[in-house]
Image (cartoon, rainbow, N blue to C red; front, side, top):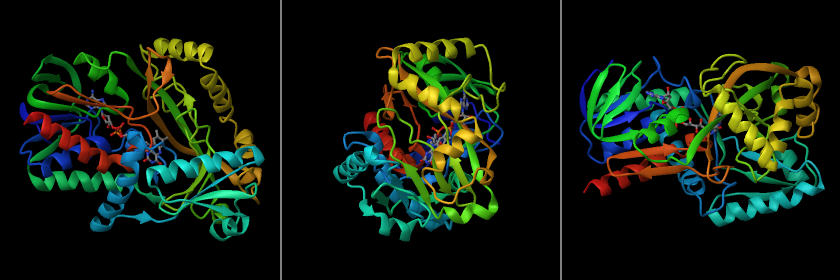
Length: 402
Ligand SMILES: Cc1cc2nc3c(=O)[nH]c(=O)nc-3n(C[C@H](O)[C@H](O)[C@H](O)COP(=O)(O)OP(=O)(O)OC[C@H]3O[C@@H](n4cnc5c(N)ncnc54)[C@H](O)[C@@H]3O)c2cc1C
């Protein structure tokens, strides 16, 4: 474990965002990077608890950071996995229409994909049956050949190994950022650390750290829980790659979908249920002093935002396997109620809310105040986007320092 009291760049958080930025800063000449991670290892939070889908950038309008970084991130992550001999399954993905009313949504996504430069094609039912023989759709579907699956922990470990091999970057585990002492000193649970630059990649806590620097005051993270169910072993053949519904493009979640993972499981999910804490992985785990404030904010959004109200009400029903079965059997032929079982896998999305507008923020948010850089709203597809995102962030840090 690394212990030091001064560094050139201090990075808070050893998730995919912090690790990718550290690697990129080394390539830009950084000599002394310290990453502090409050947990005892990698992947305890979103970076180790996601669906493992390397997205292809077809959902986002071209003016967004998500579009810009997801497409390039997909390419860079595949190259990284191949270079390091890591698992990457080029499975592709189909988006299906559950009825006639969803067909225009397929064309809207196709237009977004074209405008952003993501590869996709509208396919008919015959073509769909060659790709996903058991997928159901109304006349047309959208095919994304560049979507892939990966093993999150493999990638995190490989990046950490790269950093350790450089001897210019180290991770100090079980070390928590507690507060800012002054503009160049942080108090951590292992003592004070002086830094020249700080990168805040603290995932679900990134807003709190940003507030210490006097930035991002209008933002708060509202945690959303993603739970999964899975197909029993004998029914995994029903899904070859990824089968997604047409999402509600007014909210940032993609709807319950099937993913045949790189570990050869078929997951259904994740849900997007308002959570009671930033680490509320199980029913009563992760409740803390902030829980009443979180409930208050969720209550306000429920009252004032009709999209939030509708989706929260729908999502809570997904705790019921019967409800998930009814939803998912509209995407997949041959599915029976007994084919679905609960999965012991839960993630929390660090979803940003803009308190001024009262709305969920749809895009990544990066705030650079010169001495510190804050990564907020690193929600899906942030894992996919990480290497491209890090490249841009590192270039920005280097240019603002010179
Ligand atoms: C259910 C779910 C499914 C998803 N599916 C996909 C997908 O298929 N594809 C995709 O591309 N993306 C997906 N995502 C999104 C992706 O996983 C996240 O966007 C990404 O992992 C965020 O990485 P991060 O490094 O920013 O945050 P994290 O992984 O949360 O890392 C932040 C780290 O900071 C540490 N930390 C926090 N506070 C402190 C502190 N005070 N001091 C020290 N350390 C601290 C935490 O312990 C943590 O390890 C999914 C997310 C969820 C929740």
